[in-house]
Image (cartoon, rainbow, N blue to C red; front, side):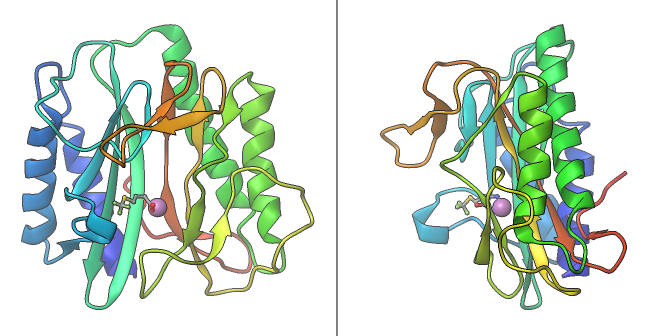
Length: 237
Ligand code: MF3
Ligand code: CO
C-alpha cells in the first residue's frame, strides 16, 4: 500500500506543473495515466463500475467524479484531481484541488479550509480513537469557517479493494463509530461546498455538482492508523 500510495503522490505532485489555463482536463488525464504506468501502476478508477477514465477532474461547481473532457481550464478556476492506483495487489487513493493561476480570496479560503479539515481528520486517525472522531473533526473545522460538508459521498476503507469497510463520513458525533486500530487503512476525503451541501449527479451518471452551482473543493489521502499519529501513504510534500 505504501508503494501504491507513493505512485499516487508522485503523479499528483507532477500534475502541479501541468495544471494551467488553456489545458484541457483530458490532457491532465493523458499525462496522469502515462505517469501511473511509467511508475509501474495501473489506474484504479478506469472501468470501476463502468467509470470511463483513469482519473477524476472536478472543476469549480463539480464536487467529485468529473470525467476528463475537452473542457479547457481558465484562469481563476479550481480543479480537483482524484487519482487511484493499483499496484501489486493493493490500492492507493488521493485527491488535491489545484488553483488555476490566480484565484479570488473566497476560493483560496475554500481550498485552505478543506485541506486543513483533511489534516484535522487525519490527526484523529490513531489507535484507540473512534471513527467518528475523524468525521467530527472534519465537520467542525469546515462549518466553523462557514462552509458546508457534503453528505452524499464519503471516504472509505481501502486496501486490497479500492472501497472497503468502513465508510468514512465527513460529519458525525465524536466518540462514536467503530474503534480504530493500528494497521487499519482509510481513505479520508472531505468534499466541501461554499454554499449548500446538496449535490446532484448529471445525466452522464457520474459528474456530481453542487445543487446551487457554487464552488466545491476536495482533498483526500490514504492513511494508515498508527499509535500516535497516522501515517499518510499518499504524502507528496
Ligand atoms: N476517490 C474516489 C473514491 O474513492 C474516486 C472514485 S472514482 C471511481 O470513491 F470511478 F472509481 F468511482
Ligand atoms: Co477515495
